[in-house]
Length: 222
Length: 222
Image (cartoon, rainbow over all chains, first blue to last red; front, side):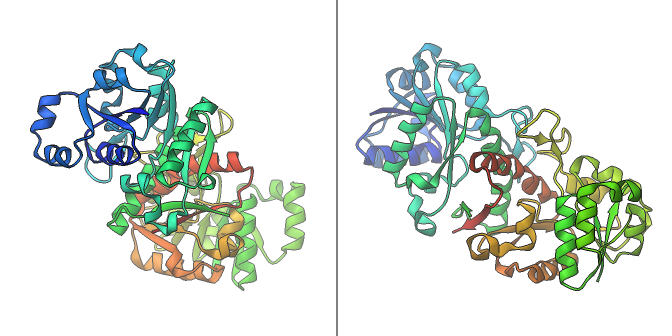
């Protein structure tokens, strides 16, 4: 599949690398291509992952069949606004971002206006009403998104929500190719449920603080 | 121990019943004793649990060595305000409540002003600065609070936070008497971390909605 990954940070890199290993065609999107290529860390990563093509957000979205949103939550809407909105029509956007506000240090809170009674997932769906926003993978360390076997033999829970049932089914298929077992993907319903999964970051970040490691996951047991 | 349980609802009843079974002296507190005794459901429960004594919030707090707050989050501060504040001095308050706002139906949100950058746990600690507020057990169905073995052979996680290390140690001991294994009680730090555990309700309530059962738990795996 032709897949665009928005965001050149660790999350975007991790997703792009996995998608390439699964033989997808992958474009990674950034605000400013020259600036990104001048960043030492990105340049080194790109040398080792040269199959990943680089473009502006607008360019990579235009050519993609499916889009991952992996930019920082604080700039997600701005990022999508920099693209042609019709380029998202009928496409699946897998939103793995979280509206974290680091302005007051650690632990971050959620961005004012994007918590409790609203969410970034809903905001993105509102900005792009013709896209199929699927929120998933946002409640874990990025290594576990694409390598779920790294903790507890892969026995832990990934939440998914979104308004379009077929889009969620496609995403579940992609997650299975990442190593997720179907029975560990919990469908919460429509995109409003992003209020729940994004709020999970408020406990995630504190468990991370207590354990000094992101190598843990929520396993819903019964 | 002489223990006061504030709140005559299902959570308060469940806690009181367990504490009696462990040979504690238990008082359950309510706003209006006569009114509570006229409620059919409470009357029936009390007939079967006659060792639990009933009193006003102020009365039961006055005589207690340790206090459980199990009233609805929306009335928690009002409840504590109806007592003599000095009666809480140096006492442990185990706060199991959540600031849920059901005014717009299901799923509830958190009460405005008590989410994200603040929490009910912190609010209670602020109102009663000489008490030792310990937030715990608030991320699960009440049956599991006192019978952790009911799911996954007791292998799942209970969060705890509070400013006083000795108070938390006492509470961990009480939780062990409920059946909790010490290694499954995760200390997140001071009471500010209630922002994380209370936010967990926003996902809890949605998992409950998807599963139609409260018999599940978060197990942090690594």
